[in-house]
Image (cartoon, rainbow, N blue to C red):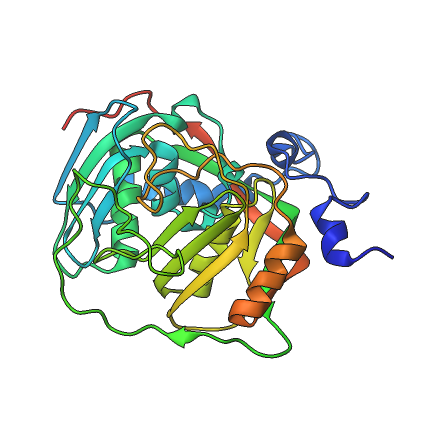
Length: 322
C-alpha cells in the first residue's frame, strides 16, 4: 500500500477534494423527510443575537471604502482597547468574529460582498478580553453589514498536527517587554530577517512569513498550536489542518517548510492581517511533516474531520454609515 500521508495528499480514490459546491450540498432539501430545520438554529441565533441586544459592541467603529492598492496591515487588539485594519475583507472580519469558520476559506460562502474591502478602526475598553472582542466584531457584522447566516455540517479530509514519537521540542513563550505598537501606515510589517533568514518580529506581532523560491520561513511568538495549524493551513490550498497535539499554552519558535512562492494580492504585506495569499499548488504534505518532525518534534497525520460551514443568507453590499 502507498504511504498513507502521500495517498491522502494526492486525494485517495474514496476521498473527494474540498470542493465548495460539494461541501454545501447537504443532499437534503427543505421539506424532505430528512430535513431538520432545528440543526441550523444555533447558527441563526449567533447571527441574530447582536440585533436583540444580547451582545457587546465597540464604543467607536469607523468603516470606510479603501483602494485595493493600500497595504494590508492589522495593529492593536483587544488588550489595547483599539484596533486598526488598513484594508480588510468582510470574509476576514467574519473569520475574526466567528473563529470556528476561520481555518479554511471555503468554510464561509454565499455572498459576493464577502470579498469587499474596507478600512476599519474600532475602539473599546482597554483590557477587553479576546472573547468579548470577537463578540464585538460579530455585533458589528450584524448591525453594520446586516450579516445573517445558517450553518451546515460536512465531513472532510484533513491533516492533524500531532506530537512525533520522539516528543515535542517547543519553547514556552516568554513575556515581551512593553514596546510601542507597530505603525498602521508607512514601512512594511516585516522587521527584516535574522542571520538564518527567518523574519524578525516587530513589537506586538505574533507571526511573520518570508517566502523564498522553494521554502517558507516562519517566525512565531506567543503562538498556540491551533494558531500554528491555521497558519500552516494557509499553505495548503485544498486541505484543512487541525491541531491534535493536546499541547496547551503558547510557544516561541521558528519553522521552515518546503513551499512554492505564492502569488500575492495587490498590496499584501506578509503577516499583516490581510486575507490568505493565493497559494501555489503542489504542497508536499510528506515533506512538511518531515520538516515539522525534524524542527519541532511534531508531524502530520491524515484524519477525517467534521466541520461546520457558514452559508451567508444576507450581507449588505455596503455597510451602514459611521
